[in-house]
Every structure is written in C-alpha cells, then in structure tokens.
View (cartoon, each protein chain N blue to C red):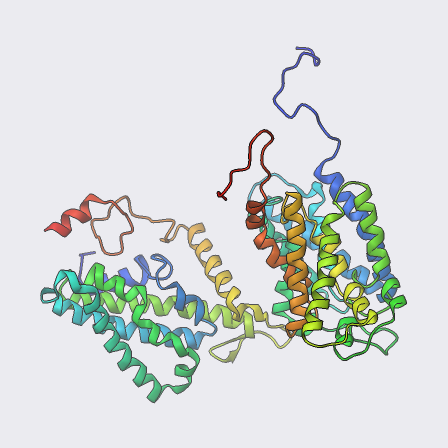
Length: 316
Length: 229
C-alpha cells in the first residue's frame, strides 16, 4: 500500500513537538539560573547539579532495567527532574544529598506511580520536601558569601533586614543554587512562554496571588508593608523559580485555563500563609506539593462545557 | 496441622494470618506508635495482653451473650481489660505509658481485638480462643517491633536505644515521622508479595480454606451456612 493511501488511526495531524523537545526547552530555560548559581556559589554548585541529574537518570534507567520496562531516559524528563531538584538545593549540600534526593524523586514519586505523566506530585519538589523533613539541619545550611552574609533574604527579612533590590535581581545573595537571580529566572520564563511551553497565566497567577496574600496577611498582622519588604518576598525566595518551572508542570497541574489560575492562587495563598503566619521562612515547595494534590479537584470544578451543550444548572 | 489446637492457633496468628502483614488490621496503632522499637514492643504486648484475656472471657461467655447485643458486651469486656492494662502500665512502665499516650485507651476500639472476638472467640471454646489471642497478639507485637526497629534504625541510627549505625550516618528523620511509617509498611508488604509470602493481596490459600476466622471473602455461602447452624 502506498503511503498516500494509507488509512491510519488518529491523530492524523502530527506536531513535531515531542516530550523530548519540550524537556529540552525547559533545560535551556533553566541554564541562565544555573549559570548564575555556579557563578555566585562556585564550582560546588555545578557538581551538585551534575550529581542530581546523574542520580535521576541512573535511577530511572536502573528501575526500568530491573523491572524489564521500556527505557524512557531519552525523553529527558529525568534530566529536568534532576535540574529542578538541584536548583532547590543549597550549594553546601554534602555529595550524597542530591543522589538520595534524585533517587527518591524518580523511584518513589515518579516510577512507583507509573512513570512519566502519572506522578501525583512534582517529583523534584516532593524530593526536596523529603530531604527537608529528613535532614533539616543540612537543608537549612546556607552557603556563605564573602564570609559575611549567610542567611537568605527571607530569613533576613524576618529580622527586619531587607536585601537591596539590585542584589535580588542579579542574584548576588544567599539562597539555593537556582533561586537567587530574578533576572535569570525571568529570562527562562520569557523563553518558555515564547516557545509556547508554558502559558503566562500559570506563573503570573502564582506571582500576583503571592504578592496579594503576603500584603493581606502583613496588613492583618499590623506589619508595615514597604516596597523593600514586598521586593524581598517577590524576588528573594524560591517563589519565582517555583512559579515558572514547577507550578507549570504538565502532569501535576490542571489542564483547564481557569483551573491553572485557581491552582496558581492556591500556591500563592499557601506560600503566603507559611511565610507570614507559619513559623517557616519559605514554603513554596510545600505550597506547590499541596496544590499538586488538589489538582484533580480543581480540574473537576473547571470542566469546560462541550461545544453545543448548555451548561446544566443546579448540577455540579 | 490440626485445627484449633493451641500450637496451630499460635502459628496461625504469628505467620499465616499475621494481623498486620496479612489481615492488614489495626493500621492506626501500627502506623502511629512505631516510632521506635520500644514503642512497638510496648504497644504490641499491651494489645496482646488485652487480646488474650478478652478472647478468653468472651469465649467463656459466648453461650450467655445474646446475639443482638454482642457488640456492646464485647466492648465492655475489652474496655475492662484495657483499663487494667492502662493502670498497670502507668504504675510500672511509666516511660512507655507516656510515649504511647492516647493509643493505650484506643486499644478498646482496635479492630484486631473486636475482629477476633467476632470471628473467633464468639464461636470457639475458651482454650483455643485464649491461644488465638496469644498468637494474634504475638504476631501483632512481632510486626510492630519489626516496623519500629526499622524506623528507629533509619530515623535515629539506633535500635532499642543502642547505636547500630556508624557515627558518620546522618539520621533520616522523616522515618520517625508519619510518612516513614507508610514507607516502611509499604516496602515490607512489597517484599512479602515479591517473595510470595502470605499477604493481604497475595493469599496463598484457594477460595476457601474451610476456616472462616480471618477470611475476607464476602458473599460466601459457607459462612452463611455455618452461621445458621
């Protein structure tokens, strides 16, 4: 049979986009943040990143080899998981931390639930929470810059010291490998939006709602809300990084447009709750993991009406 | 092995129908109190004591307890023994008593105890029921100790308070928090299935082994018939 007359099953129109090309775009978008991290924190940050990636890819390969499943490491999703885990770690982490985290992310959170597209939480963030709960001392060991400042901008802000906006934008302050430079993250975000990998509403809803809720909680608590204070909350923590690279994950966030906005607001609300009301200094990773769990409910609420059907009233 | 002999009941409770690993009963104390091996032993033995005595008394009284009010009657018997155990623990093993806290009074509503009363002690003679309680209790103790020891080993590097891991080992504190209990239980159950040991999802017996105690099969004609008799 000739190729033109070949009757095939759907889909008939194919996109050149594959999982691997999408993941490659995410990797490209992460490069500026990691580059800044390596520049600010030195070669150790690069080593941590590489260990995390190697651990994720190796875990996936070994798991699939042992269980005699098709090997899926070429779709690059494990590489992305490794990079996202690494940008969430401090460069002072001991060598085994990214390895353990990567193995946990891939084996427990991703593969045990059925592999790519089946995980209930963002694997990298779940692994970060796992590490944070397991080794709280190591995971809060801030890297020292110039031997002077050691705490992150959010920790300093709790004591009333605000990091200058210039440092926040460029990334010359303490923090995890990828979260320090706002400009680098925004470059990645613009690239992803331009390539159509993520929709601008996903990060924007997280960023705006975090700002709104942080202001709201601070006003309620009677704390003065200054521009410096807001700048630290918007640019100083992991919120931007989470909004761009983690709250836009395909598997663990809603597919409906309004669902994505609600999801973003959930993340913003929980983040502000943990930062302002709770005892912790940073809560973006917990906020995203909790919102990941809410995703099926949010999708159920925002199912669009099929074309030609009237919305049933009084029924959910 | 001959049915309903003391030895068979012990084997049944510890291995064949282990309440935690095979019947998957009593998950609440299993997951909540096993933060250390000592807590596991304490919880297991106190449940075992209650289970033996309540099985014995319920079995003796099984002809007197009317069918309709058997549940309240069982609860009264179980609650009495839980109170005894609680007061004894408060008096003699104060540290275990404080660390188990609320979970000791909660033994009253432990589904292993009510399950054994309903499915075994209410139908069988006192001696066999007593050993059924002992077997189930020891099985529960064994399971809780294993889970507790694994969690303590990974979460603090110690077992029963003795240092096992080298000094360089960094304790994985999540193992002594709530998620750790799920991790350990899930991994143990997965290993059971892998090595084809009896478990809730991998029952070695065929449809019916002839013994209704601990049988999970619903709509089973055999059970209805034996109830009618």
